[in-house]
Image (cartoon, rainbow, N blue to C red; front, side, top):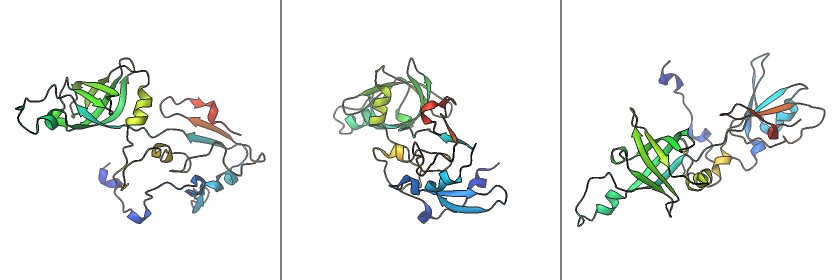
Length: 228
């Protein structure tokens, strides 16, 4: 399989830059299994398509604000002359960290990508937030340039990530991320890009279906997502 197999023409006019205010108006492609025919629908039509005994599996995975902007301590940077006007920016320059996965919870170690890569060596300390709310130390460098970092213990780590982090938007979204966009672009099944309401509008007791909500990490059903 080649990467080029996934290349296809996608007109810019067909790329939604903003989620719809009315999520139930999101477009949905209906494929009829018996005939293979395609039909354009909207998500609010979904409850009327359910039949007795159907099982609906919802994806409740949330977009994680994994991009952090901060500064480095300069502990591992090459020493410059104090009279050099670039000294402060060189030693304490801006850094970008993209968290890719949590390796351990205690200690709080993460695998990440960093920028600028050449200036962030092992032993460097990174600070995030106006008041240095988060601090991390670079522990090691991987074979492909990734880093292992360890965050200083804090009781509200994920709350701080939600506050300080940014959503890494794909390159075809031509705007900066905004606070609150994470919930707006969370994926859902069966309507991609539409946030499913807890109980689909128009659902009635004559169409009894069981919905099971699955978390991408635990793979365990969450009872709070079940509706009938």
